[in-house]
Structure formats: C-alpha cells, structure tokens
Length: 79
Image (cartoon, rainbow, N blue to C red):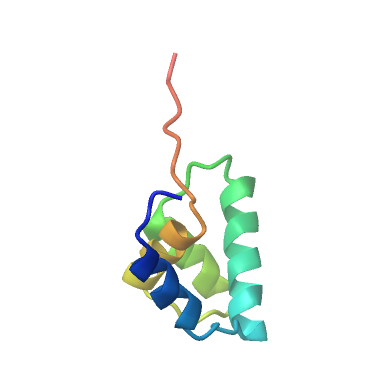
C-alpha cells in the first residue's frame, strides 16, 4: 500500500463524511456540463454555467470541485 501503519490507523479512525443531496446534485451537474463541453471548459466558464442553473458557487470553489472530481481540461488542437 506504500503507506506506514500509523497513517493507516489514522485514516481508519477518521469519521466518514456524508455528502448532502444538494452537493451530490452539484457534482453531477458539474460533471455533465464538463463532458458536454468536450472537456474544454475551465473553472471560470463552468462557474458561469453553474450559476445560470441556480447554484451559488465561486471560482475557487469550482476549481477545487474540478480537482475533487478529477476534471482536467484537454486543450483542443487547431489545424
């Protein structure tokens, strides 16, 4: 596992975090919008699209949301 036993036991004692229904809806919508944009939308544009759908979210929270969901932007090549 490439981790020490003390780190494992700390992780084991950590309480589980529950995701609220609103947060789950935000995750699903963000991922869907990202896929619809062919993985080319960044945090600013994703924030604007989520705001138009009624979510209260800022740019930095959108960036951390993208990191959590592992949404990385793929730059398209212009021919």
